[in-house]
Image (tube, rainbow, N blue to C red; front, top):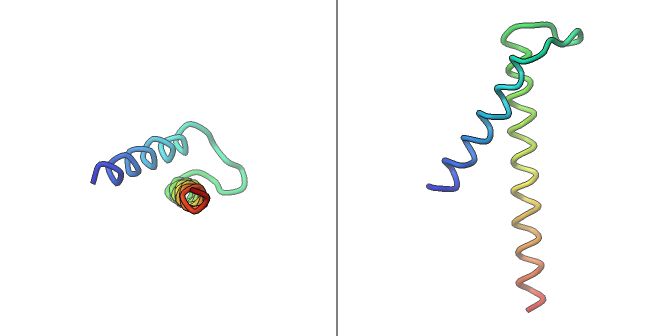
Length: 62
């Protein structure tokens, strides 16, 4: 549960950056914010999977 809370906190933190700038390609509004939320969610999932993979590889060596 602690990990999920941390994960949601990071997603919220990085998704909030969508409100800090404008984007000519996506425009302003909810689609732009949605794009950033999806982007950072995928980013966090990739980092998580890389960490799990690295820990598995390290434990297999020992």
